[in-house]
Amino acid sequence: MDIKNNTANIVSVSRIFVAFGAIALLYVQTTWAYLLAFILTAIAFSMDGVDGYIARKYNQSSEWGSVLDILGDRIVEASYWIVFAVLGWISIWFPLICVTRAFTTDGIRSVALSKGYTAFGEKTMQSSKIGKFICASKFMRISYAVAKVAAFMLLIIVNTPGMELWEGTLALRTVTMVIAWLAIIFCVVRAIPVVAESGKFFKS
Image (tube, rainbow, N blue to C red; front, side, top):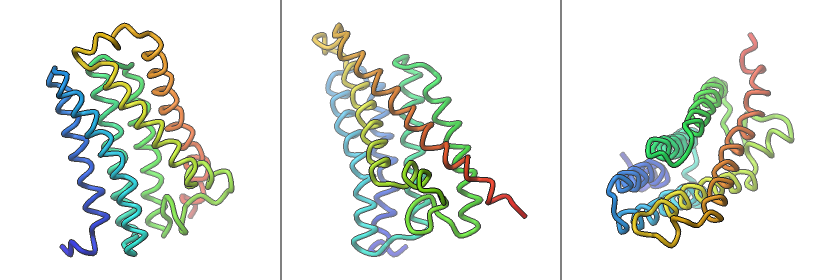
């Protein structure tokens, strides 16, 4: 593989393993393990922006890169929600909603890709202005990413062993759950235009 011309794709894939490292640390019930998981989570999500920057700056944008970017998003997001639910920090509905949305939108996007459309960029599959805004605009993509990373990092912080100061702080836990619900609502809302505009890809 030509590493020089695939730097963005390498970053996209690497962040999955960074996230897995953070998740593994959540099963090490120590304060330092959780703090390291917190830092790795921040790094994993910052890499989501780095791969896009590299792709644009060094002209490495491609359909394959777009697929890898979305694939990385799905694996990282679903993995965190699933583990948080397994640990008992959130309701099982969070990962169920996330996974259902992922299968639905990505199934539709795979059909769109076969017809020359991509999820984002100049060849975006969204044709309506509202659809483009909700799914492909920088504002919505950044807002969704911020909501996710804030929810994940706060969930780790409020459940960090040895942090008795935070364990009984109802306000912080309430804020954490509000942001977590906001993130999952974003997840659903951004799927609506994909489903609503999918009919054109299935016409003969």
